[in-house]
Length: 592
Image (cartoon, rainbow, N blue to C red):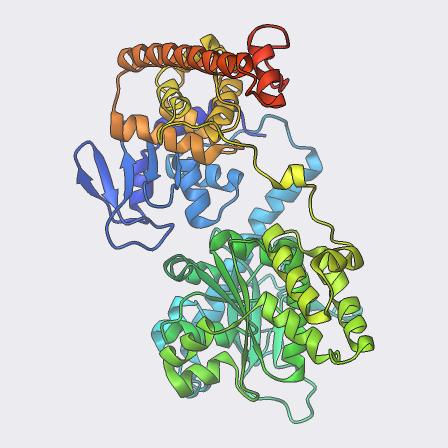
């Protein structure tokens, strides 16, 4: 929707050092700026920001990109939102390639109005908290400090059916109903949704208020008033997509490389007060796939924390089932069950941060939890029990997409059910990939730094050089060759590829299939080799000659093996191909 010309103009106007410097403490180091990487935990700086090239690169974790990419990675913003934030910081108005329909334009304008309504309501609730000794006393009795209440922007909804009139004299405004702040009852009567409750604002990734959670100060004697009450679904708020406390937890999540998902607002706030700053809470709804995917993007470990009672275990099992298709081999998902009668709030106050974090570190893995539940339901000493065990395991194993995790679980299930792995794969209908897909092709011997890698690095100095490269000279079994082909395809779309600057190239490779390899190559050229264009172009040509020499030597090696009758059928076919008796590029792949 956003024109390419606008994005490039925006990148020309913003200074990445200033953008990154809002969140990372940078110091000058030669031509670049250095700091501790915000995307992984490190003690010595490996994070570099180049003011000349206007991109950042971490030599520790490989994070790389321009100002747009940094905002997306650091703040969790979507692509369009990151562009809008950057544009607002330099006074630019984001255009759209396609005009909105009148209905969409009105909806967007209405959403802007609703954000303002929610912010005004929050300021009202915060002011009411300061005026209510009773609400302040409740928070103190719960052990919360004024500092933590301010950090989470907590407020208080007064015990008044139309208390919001104090902030909205036009109480009949339909926006109050649209935002879920006011309920419209029979015969058009209106009243505040939140009354006599501590109010917890729910923020989106940009820090805007989109909803509220309210907790009663005292449970009603008749049980008619729920302990927790959340905003309804509104144009701004969708429970299944949001979590509470993410804005405040973002730095803690990066530092710990872990997300802890708990059930209550007070759990998040209490944990943060005790220094466990990586907790978030679902919003009165079961864990959704969107929740899991969002959390796994933020950290390498996801821990669900539930009460140890029957309700907690039921909620944990639902979270597990939701997580199965999204589990990744390199990102463990764990489950922590606290002693019955405890929640994170009460546990951390009674036992302290260290005891709680020991529990987190010792939380059950997803696989242990699965196997434990299946074993508890089946008598593995009998054939019938083992049959039940396999039956229970089948649907869950079929949902798992992570290949290594699935393989390990299938092996464990086979051992417990007293069947072979092949029998388990057949019975569970989880046959592995064909051998041809599982086994990596033999790799051609080459130096630690391949010719293909060196070519890729120098191609960033003058991308038009890629048009001169014969793909048949390249090894067909390495990442660098594939990255060269992808880079060539990206720059072919540009009339003058050599006119692209580093910010524009970084933007083009951001979503590439081999983005990590391409980003490392670009950073290596600019931040380590620092080759000028002419020098890089000359070295590129020398490397092409080295490829031709390598090709010739390989031809001679194959020729001798064929003449001596020592060649395998594959080598013989390769020799015939190189001799021109078969297609020169058997893979049929696109040329570089």
